[in-house]
Length: 244
Image (cartoon, rainbow, N blue to C red):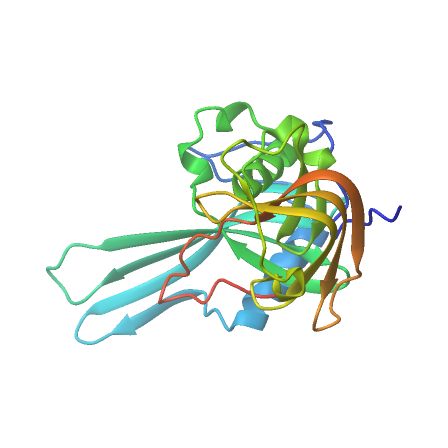
C-alpha cells in the first residue's frame, strides 16, 4: 500500500534550541538555508520589505521574523509585520500575519496560519522544530504527537480514526465528484460518510490524486477522516498564499 506523504512526517525530536526576543521571534543563528527559503518566498510573492514614505510625513514598513524552522524538512514559521502611519501626528498602526512556508515536492508553498505562535504560552521553551510542529498541528487539527500518522498531499490529509463517528451518515453522492479545494480528487473503494459539519470519513481504500499533477498520488486503506488544512485569512496588504 502506497502511503507517500507530501512532506516528510514530523517527528517528536526537538534538537535546535534558539534565542527569542520578547515577542517570540528567533533573534540569531538562523540557518542559511532557512534565510534563503524566506527570501525566495518574499521574492515570489512580491513582498517589499523595509520602510517607504506615504503621503505627507507618513510611512509604511514591512519586515519579516522567523519563529520556527526545521532544516531537514525545509519548513519555517514566519511573521510578516506591517507598521504604518498615515501622516505626522497619527498613531502608528501595526498588523501581523503568520505563515508556514516550505518546499513541498520541489515546489515553494506558503500557508496562512489562523493562530499566532506568539500567543502560545509554551513558545519560550519551544525549539525551532517545536514551533513548526505546533503550526502543523493547528493546520490539521491534531495533537503534535499524531502528526506522524497523517498521510498528506499538500494541505489535504487523511487522518486515521478508530471508528466512524455515530453522527456521520453514509454518503450517497458519487464519490467521483469528491474534489477538495478544487484540485484534490478522492476516489473511495468502500464506504464514504459525511457528518452534519460536512466533514467526510471513509472505511475502505482511498486514493488521493492531484488533478493538476503537482503532487504524487497517495493511497491508504482503513478508517480515515479527510481533512482540508485550516487556513488563516490572507492580509490584503500581503498576499500570503502560494502553492496548491
